[in-house]
Length: 186
Image (cartoon, rainbow, N blue to C red; front, side, top):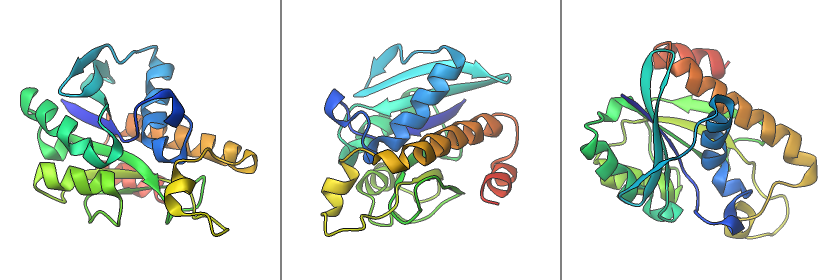
């Protein structure tokens, strides 16, 4: 079984924030296929479905971002999901809004959700899908920026990147991750 984890913060107040780009991508997959996060365990909401003949678990940790690994690791253990079958989707300040990047492994790059995942999985070797949110242009603190909504001028690009992220997830159900990387990072 493959596992797609969207990182974000739970609660209505964070729903449309840049930091919830991972949740938005999972929500897009749920909407496309008329699925729901209908299970809850280990502080994570999730669904187990079949896409293109492949079983997939979609997860939204209900911890806050900095504790994401605390929800994901027990789910992986419970369902016996290997680290190589996990794809984590999250926001990235170093990519412009509208862009996505896939990687097979890497460091946390200052992202506390990814830091938590690395700490709890015990490895940096898990697949990632980064959704660009850009950097603040003014003196606004980064935390206020990522916990803010996309500006009106960015909303179309943000929606396109969420769609592309969902497309890449669907492609991963049918192709090796390296092929998906080459296609979507082009």
